[in-house]
Length: 181
Image (cartoon, rainbow, N blue to C red; front, side, top):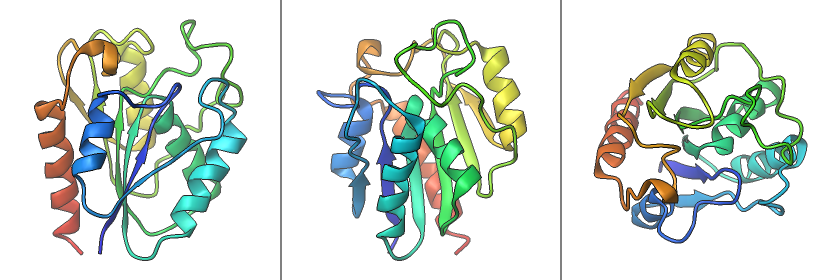
């Protein structure tokens, strides 16, 4: 059975965030619960993600938002597992001027192809990454990029609710990969 892991970003994805809604609707879903949502440290966040991944049997699909996407990329540099694929939604430019100073360890992102299929969903007006920078990282990581219009950081402030557009893109990507098993 396919395991789906949801990896939220800085501050968590609760209180009506599209990621939390999709998590509650997904069979065999797992939520990465970080110890410190307000002062993220890459080493701790990567180890928490790895502990969850290593505890599961069978193929794994990752759905990451914001810093969760950066965590997936950093994790893939150090570890491996039966990852079917990943969706990275609104990952930040960790080298950008708007990247929060309280977040540590992410400032030098890996620029290597990810070892699994990846879909990046990017807003045209994300305050944490310009489209140019997003394209740069996507090219290095070997991800497919879909722009989703002007949706800010695709977080609770974007007012997306269950975000039908994103849900459809995520599920279609997941189904296309699962069909190849």
